[in-house]
Length: 513
Image 1 (tube, rainbow, N blue to C red):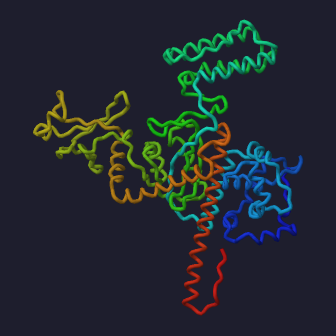
Image 2: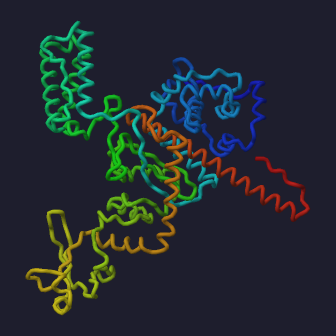
Image 3: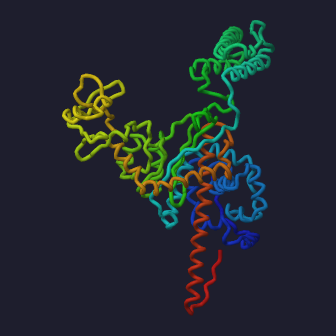
């Protein structure tokens, strides 16, 4: 049952007058109204029965403060107990009893889901748009990695770890490890090749599983049976054996990803969209480290549009140069400010150019195509453009250009090459290069979340925990940015007021920050 009562009516609340008006939490509160959180989370509580619970708005604000100042559950409660600004922001009296630190973990686990945090991000952005804080119409998209809160292990080390647990559980549940079970786990021999050593390890664990299953039942040893089933599941996964699947028993959802061809990490990827001008995050999606950038693009776009933001352009790196994304942007009438990816668009523009109006390709010597025909290859459908025979027969590069019995050059291109060519020409213009500088702002945001708000490493284990961390971090940096913009507007207004006062005979204007 949600406990709602009048706020800050204690005599001690007069102490809140000592908080400066330009404090970050007061600036945030002047723009964002958090009362919608009670309505948003009321479905997680029993309305009429049970012990009165702490107000959802206050608990959510505690989580926001925790990520805003990068504090642990215990530390944030200790700070609130002595910080007047924190108490005022939470809406409590200085003499009110604070919740136990363990209640924060329960609140995140049982009351908050990823969708609720999405709604909080969206509502904060919507309020800022309504109040004129956000005016930008261009967004950035990017992904950043987060290291898991555990070390990655090889498949053999994971199997060894489970085997040791099996032997311990057998002693607990049966009394001793059966004599038939071979407890001598093979040691890794550097003189043996890795594949052979891994194969020997797998054979050993298969024998252990078979022997244990003959000696125990699920009734007599439930925990041991559970571990046996876990080993069988791991061995049945082809990715696990070659070390491309589970790499930790502590965090089974983390995966190995690559920042470059030679630089890998073990953890998760956070993909998000951000307003380019105001640098406010509008949507967040979290996946394992092996996630391919761009797969969640539609979800991120829809979540951003829920806030009422009108999007005119989208900035992204080459990873987002995909047909599905480009088609979506075209349908939504959003300009694609994305550099051309050489992996998708493989045409050599130094040799060929395209005229969209006439649907003709021109070679480097000026020869042009006269006809086109659709063909089907192993890789899919292509368009075969045939050049003019008379021009090709007289061309000085005839022998270099093509070979065989064909009388003229035939250029085969993908069905989307013509559209990609147009985008590649736009990407070469000075206007595109100048505007594309806006994308760099998202790199600042990546660094801010990692360096100052703990997104460099996961706080917990699993995809859900990482999703909560990433979205709460996004809310925290958004509120910090909103406070900075409000302060900037107030400062500009005061400068204008002082200048106006000097040029007129009006009563002096006093500006308070």
